[in-house]
Image 1 (tube, rainbow, N blue to C red):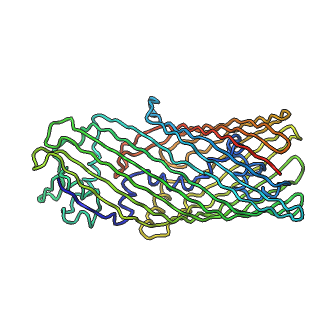
Image 2: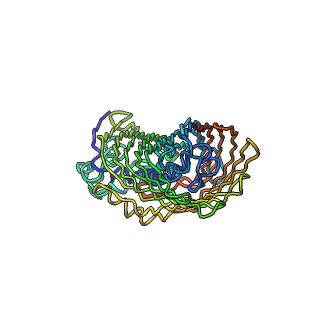
Image 3: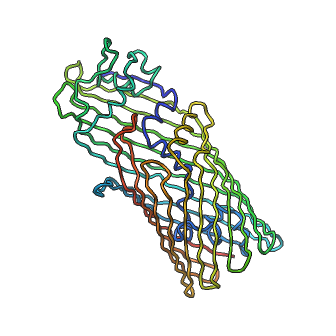
Length: 466
């Protein structure tokens, strides 16, 4: 057995290896998908609607509508299920408890100013795949193609750990005459199992203030601290349909990506007439600083060499880098039907091309995003009707496709609340469906796994005023 310790020299090596990294950047850009019970039950159409702490975090002007000191606490759970697109065969399910939201709004009777604090779990990274393929291409092929022409002694320095480890574990041999790496197996006829597990959260702490300029106009601003953490585990194992000296190959990869970011929101709320309310908010770009910790192992079984199983391990030291997400512009309107109920609509616009890197090694991302990602739009509609102390809610949302291989996202929601003089108990449920793709080994971005994601979020909360 041999062992090779390698450094992850630059992030471009790892980021080009797996397509989920681009997904991670795009999910950092996503609007808030998890919130309190009212936000959830109305499909996030709350930019022009008070009574939701998550809505206040997104549009700080809404805090100006509070006439009493307010508190809110919510708990919930998330289930995300992955199906094969063709036959809807179950490929993986993840379940996790979440703390969607808690918050507080102050009220000084002598001042038009309101201060507020809101914690929100904005987004959950939760994916689990088990992909099985027969008579398929090996994950070694794109690595070999990239390594060809580079002698073994220059692999780690000029290319990176994946290419070097493939040679160090004796999965391939070097042909100096043709300047190529060759395998004794037929890598175009491979049976493999690929397991992918990802978990993580994006959380936001918001401190802000709102100001009532007049009975019609409200303005607000906030400062936000955003944290993000992601853990990915990948196991790939393959065998070969044609008998050869190479009997077995496997790879395992574990990496952790953590970030701390800062941002802010500016918002306004306008009541031109009693039955109409308008709201708008600008979420400023989030400036994130990351720490990436990475480790991977390649193993091969070849009876012809001195040991029947060889292993090469690559280690990445903690690598620091940064990214700036694009701004998000939200707008909406609410029509109030007296005390009976209301209808509210919202729109979120995200110009993904505004994504920028703060480090030289990641500047290639801008070109990838510009060429493969378009601007994103999210449309949401919600409604609420009061039947005495009982409040019924519902909504829907739609986000057209903004990248190749990913279809439109569709969601719908339901909820109810029971209200007393000072306390409201709320329930919210949201279901979202989207079809997308994942590249099990993406050096050449071929052979994607097409899947359908179904996500369900259940939130229970209590809101009270003093």
